[in-house]
Length: 437
Image (cartoon, rainbow, N blue to C red; front, top):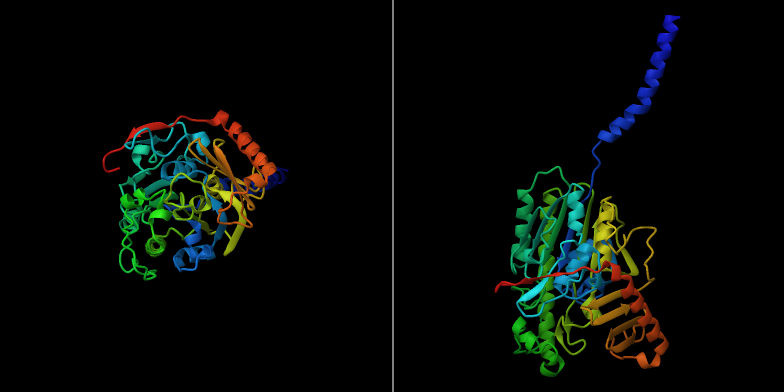
């Protein structure tokens, strides 16, 4: 009798152990979390990447990355300029909500991010990530509040891609080895004006055009709104060849960066890399240069390339998406909850439902708004502009008077969208810039 009782106890204990032990082990097991890298190449317009159909081979390395991952063919920023666009990327809030705008009341004043604006790097750090950043400063600097949420942030004023990528790898070395997953941010102004890539990139795409115009930032400012009148076709050809040379130089340096990341084990396990830009650049497309206060495609359409251990190879997405979706996508990939403050969505979610269908909103301050679908572009800034993108992809002929019903539809959509932001609006701070900035 005692023997039978003992055996029953043993059997019951053994059964409970078999059932409970895996649960205990699972609770103790280390779950691998992906390393995440966000790269922002300031002032890079999408249609100057060879993988986006450009005739020059400006981006062989980024084309390789796209071929190993997902390329979003129709990606757009929601606002224009470095400070406000990066605020949207890192917060997943529209400028209408976060309130950060470019510039201030004087040339020495700029906006600072609201202290109560949640940023993606804070979500990563709260989830146990080590958060590290290197930027070229200027309008993407500590003074603006972009360092919030980063364990280490380097924001020197205009460093360039060669020095910047080396500093990026040195910063990584100083934080390795680590048991924490990494969230890394790298930003460079290399492609931004002035267009002055080093040899041989300064002549790599030269057309032989004879130009005496030197495209420094100061010279470009003088003809910002009158370039089509003040510059020749040769001036534009020379300027574009230099811009493209800067893209190729940056692309080659990114190849070196990725080689360094591979040597340091960044890609050994799960990972996600995101390459994008904060805005494009104009070369006489609508009469001017640089990135002035307009919302045409040459200024708001940007590249968006993602490569990850769990992403498909060589996929090209044709749906219209925007920069407000970047942070939610990174967080979802890492298994981190998306804060309620974020207005974008995970681009890879099967449940993704664009709140307004196949369209995106863009704005500049509170005086210019745009709405874009695959077929139409509507811009409102006192006057109204409507472009039939199927017949007129260059946005050259305003057809608003011929489609008044479409104009009214888009005006209603913008008004409804703005009303939807009213309960979210934050107050950006202001900051005085140093003379260097």
